[in-house]
Length: 381
Image (cartoon, rainbow, N blue to C red; front, top):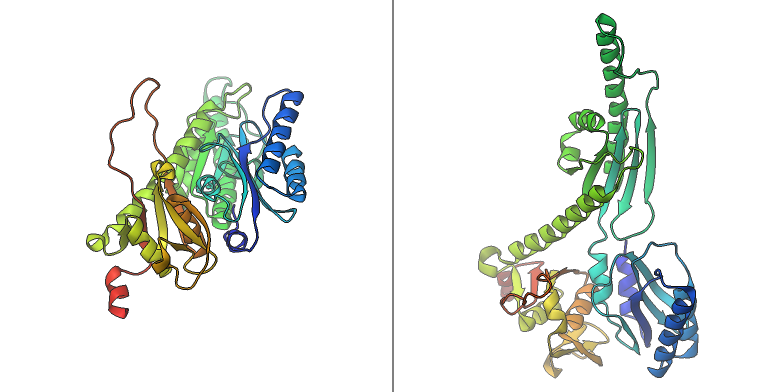
């Protein structure tokens, strides 16, 4: 997870940053990897990056963090010191970016960080379960637990008659007891980590028994996957697709809820358009900023400032702060939002099938959810 306080510290600091947003280690042969890395370092030198920064970039890029391909790296270096190095699993969200400037681009990081969604994965079997707390887009496991139930249950394929029924009942009771233990472990992980959703995969009967015992709060987070992931030779494709769909649904819901909040009371709880959003940021009034991915390449600039209000359209908006650099509208709004404690969401664009034109849509514009309604702000002015 991105440390918001650390990000604010970095973005509000003095000095000039060497930055890179690029693909991580891939499946290329070693000579090709080396060639790509040397080209990156040469380009940074051409753009004015000092040698200590270049060496810090080289060391970080050369480090194999063990993340599966594809992956991306977002890197900020200042005065030879790595200030931020964030690695994400998955494809880049936009073009590679490298350079040396006082205001580094922050949107590539924020777009990936928005999907830093924590979930619990349960792979249930009749004999027990594996439980893992994971974060989407990140390698590794945040926490893991294993539940091993009793092993004295007998298979249901037995001789017929009364003995067969008794064996069935015996096995079923042991399975229920095992899933009760799994439920206890799951409820503890949910309580500790507050995941966005819970995925249950594995043996069909084990899933049924476990789901029957879930409490209401955990049941509300449930994503059931019809995949026996614990079976030998099982394919994880259905599981991966279910988790990806749950993450996508969560992100869309967050954006829809933010837009709905901005529209409350005929829009009194929101700001819409560059001028209105800049005015709200100037008062640290923005709670959540929503950008559309199509806005990221829109022409036009804003002034990035060295102190509050952090962003301005012209000299009338600066309130005594100094201009650091001219930046794109989207970057200027996002940077000011982070520095005033607001969250930033980017509404990604669904690309049409290959060969089909992009459908016509209304011109995108930034939307901000306000911490207090417009009327309250105007009354106190």
